[in-house]
Amino acid sequence: MSAAPAPSHSPSPQPRRLTVMAGPTAVGKGTVSADIRSRYPEVWLSVSATTRDPRPGEVDGVNYFFVGSEKFSEMASNGELLEWAVVHGHNSYGTPRQAVQDQLDAGIPALLEIDLQGARQVRETMPDAQFIFLAPPSWEELVRRLIGRGTESEQEQQRRLETARIELAAQSEFDHIVINDDVHRATDEIIALMGLEQRP
Image (cartoon, rainbow, N blue to C red):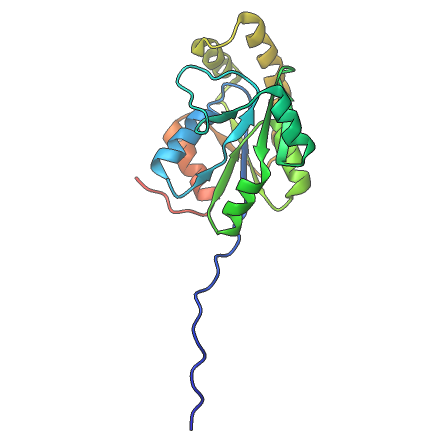
């Protein structure tokens, strides 16, 4: 008499590898992230907390969680942030830790769009993550994009460009460099690096 077959169980989702995308100011990280969100909805894009004011068209909870300085400090002190940093010497940005871990545990592809300081912190806490540097086609193009968007004062533009030079010098710290010369092309390259199937 043959033994009864063992009950079948659906395999649990395998935890995914986190992908971290960083790059200098005005390189188009937000534009590439928006393209990923619209064309590849299966990718979960982390929403950062920040102390800066919303730019025109930005929505709380969609683009960022806009929080006060006191609330942000509380989140950092309680270990609720995977990484956080003061960017351009003024505003703080950070990634809520639990939301990221929940997605990875569920097997959902997760992408963080953060700055260089944040990427370095994530490398310390999650060294098995994949790190992608989004770079401009040239320094001149980066300057043109920053000035052209017209969202910062001249003094703020200069501060951001000084930071950008430091960030560009750190490209060798990343696993991959993606040139943002065309948004759709850059998106597809990142998707391929995440091991996902590209779409037209």
